[in-house]
Image (cartoon, rainbow, N blue to C red):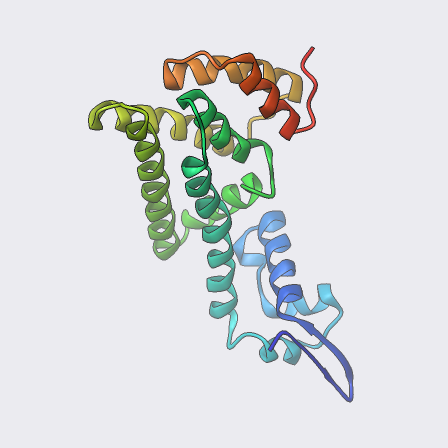
Length: 209
């Protein structure tokens, strides 16, 4: 059931409850994701929640599903996207780090923080890490690296980005873009061609200086 109405008025929608849960998770952590505070946030009755979710655990499970589908799913898709060179393939992956529609860094940080207090969520995070690393490794193998080299380069690529997220590192966009060719060269052993960089910059509405 996506939405509902009754004599007392609008009960909201499943997506509305999920979005409110997402916002609360990002703002204040998982302990803030509770039915009554979410109802107040949405200006809905507490009982409205049960039209869409069996209980709080189902809501949290759906939230994790959203994180898994978006962040892990899109990293995997970007590693598999068409590219003529490994540098271009890596730029496809870098799209994730600059496009919130592909990869939500704040969501990632919130889920990893949640994992510090939940063994179940920690297992989800570890599984996601493995899936992402394997996808990156396959990308390197596709461009001719052996298993061991592909594994190390995948780990280098991924763990640096997780470090950015964990440290909540902030960079001006111009500085980030200036560093990207150097990152690509270190991760892949290839210097990206200017036309590859131009396409990448255009995707992110950035004009190089």
